[in-house]
Amino acid sequence: ISSVAMANFDVVVVGIGGHGSAALYHLAKRGFKVLGLEQFSIAHDLGSSHGHSRIIRLQYHEHPDYVPLLRRAYELWHKLEAESGQVALFLERNQLLYTTGCLEFADKANADSVFANALRSAMEHGLEHEVLSSEEANARFPGFHIPSNFMALYQPQGGILSPEKCIKAHVERAVQHGATVHTEEKVLAWHVLPSGNVEVRTAKGAYTASKLVVTAGAWIPQLVPELQGIAAVQRQVIGWFEVSDHEAFSTDNFPVFILEDETLGEYYGFPEFDGLPGMKIGKFYHLYEPCEQPDNLTRIITSADEEVLRAAVKKYFPKADGKMCKAVACMFTNTPDKRFIVDFHPEHPQVVLCSACSGHGYKFCSVIGEILADLVVKGSTALNIDLHRISKSRKATRDIAGSLSR
Image 1 (cartoon, rainbow, N blue to C red):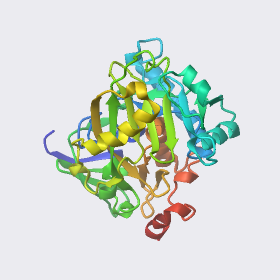
Image 2 (image 1 turned 90 degrees about the horizontal axis):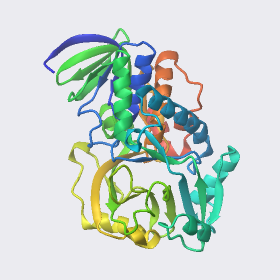
Image 3 (image 1 turned 60 degrees about the horizontal axis):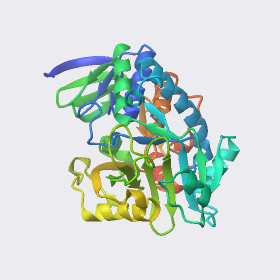
């Protein structure tokens, strides 16, 4: 795109990854003149919205208040599938959401584990679920090797989202509704004009809008300095391990999972999916490596990266203890309490901030996009986002209260 003169829009969305693409779609669908600015290509692999597969689940060990958001997220994902012609009647490769079930397991003696908290969430919200002993889980799902002191929670509606396909579907539908999208155009800065409008400057031009939505992922601390030290970027690695029994690791026999090991940590993973060989696994927060400059993320995979992943593979998935077929680095953007940031800028109500993050936010993209559109258009949303507001009530994020509530 050549140099662009000053242009006027109702809304500019900065960052067209998972959440930005959904916001773009919902705003365009409501008839607003909206511009999406993406520094890379659509569905690129340089941020936090790639990786071929993402978990979606209804039971939520993180907090029961996520469940109403998830119910709406499921509705919107299925609606997007229908609008995009990518419904379950088609082949697996055309689906956005593929149901496998979800298994969460941990030591039954731990009353604050992913298993225990997921069970509380399921019971509080009346979600369909099964509690399985390790013997029952191993017999039902032969790719797993769960120790006898563990319990498992199975939730049949759990499954896989295809992140790149979801982004493309949101963007394609947004454009059909009249959205403008500029790729390979990095935002350099933004500021509020005396008129109250917002000016956004890029290397190729400048744009004004009545409202601004910042969904810049790992780059959000650079664009919103008030979030530095609150939205902290961390290197993450996921790997695919060769399996000895493909049937045991198929989508029919191997649910997505989250496991908690008191020594190794917390892991998540997937069956072999959509033609990509190997069981996929990651460890939450991996090696706890900070990444202050996302552009300089270390993408080379080391032996230490593999060792972190293989430790859990050997213990819990011995039939997947083959060679590491593939591994990729990405980024988590974490808040101190591991919740999201979905709120207005504390000083500029015409600016909406979103960092739906901390390694568990992708499944919410569809509903977060709707919420962001609500905040832009109506100044409020019917869905409860109190967990994710920038406020003093977030006791685990004292820095937010100190830095942003002035």
